[in-house]
Length: 259
Image 1 (cartoon, helix red, strand yellow):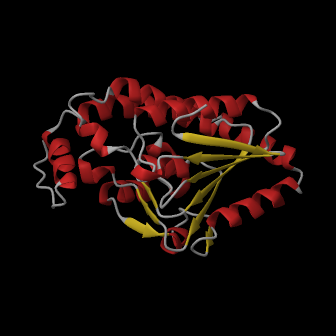
Image 2 (image 1 turned 30 degrees about the horizontal axis):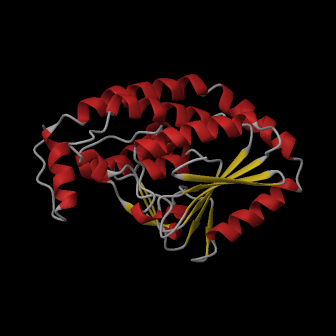
């Protein structure tokens, strides 16, 4: 059904797997569109009460596909992509399920935005989490501004976005970015046992509380993703962004000029 995702259901638990392991689950336009569509289908499926999101292979997701950004033959349609990301973020936030992110390896950039959009974040000890858009002269998208400040507050969110700092699972837990830390290799097993515990709880009441807490914030999230779309389109045209992606590909330190 999906080219870049797997969606599996077992009883009241669904597991959504990002499935581009050869590219460390970096998100191209196909995956972004499929994620929006897949989450919209989960939203309509009231037989599911818990959704676990994980990555296939070595990582959760390395973020947006930088190679796709550099492809001049099939250029990345930034306006179209930002629409998918808006749908992805708002649907993830309004799901009538408890969402659990199971993180191993890298969860960077857009991948990290998606993790932060989940209700519960379980990361392996040595996973690598970073809001590192700044390294390629971009701003967080996929609702990253909203989800990060909801987690840690605005002053801390600014520091994390501006520094692009990389955290291990253990370090991320200390500053409230992650709820639980699992031993390396046991992230998904830990997320699954957490999901089973949720199913033995009065989960309908938990989902109702989530809906009440999120309802007043939905308009704010919609405004954030609209502003992200406008600003990201502008950032994509900057000299700093071009320098950032060239430096990334060439594995060197970028020389930014603020333009």
